[in-house]
Image 1 (cartoon, rainbow, N blue to C red):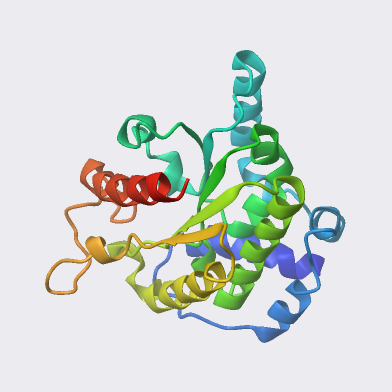
Image 2 (tube, rainbow, N blue to C red):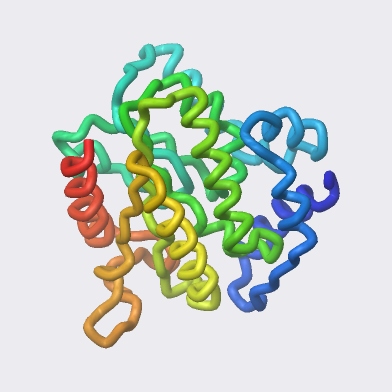
Length: 252
């Protein structure tokens, strides 16, 4: 298991620099991964793998903790957690006003890494709601199949229900981007699995931001991304803010 989990994070790191690798499903990993659950996930991961790979964004987590130590923790906000699409949303507080938000997006994170850091960047804030954006980087790793990403999401839900039982959870769909067209099908399958999962619980919500990111010719819009064709510009975040704020105000 240690070697498998190590390979996952290595895959994410190396594949992020290449968009040409074909999608691969490895069912043996999925079977092993499903042995984890919310009660044993953190200690078992720490025991089974070299956590240096899960700790690749440890410096950012430490910065969050330093900020909390200096400013104190305000509880009850809407907590945004996930990867760089949240991290780079610098105008989030303004864009989503009057929703009280706290942004804890970090690096190019994956859903398993968010699970790993649950007790440090989720639980302490006792949020009224959690908004998640993960999967954009998960799809780069062949071993992180849509089913395994769903299981990672399920573990996050289990942890939240156990430690933050009154907290609502919103999952923002994995976005299409010009630089990751090769992974679009895998993203769409993952989105569908998580959408169906969310329908089973009144405190889970799936927010679809994909439709408005395509033009009238069903092509991904180039004008809403910065030069890397992966991360969004202000115009892209305006699309997100309109959709996400509407869903939050309607359901909180």
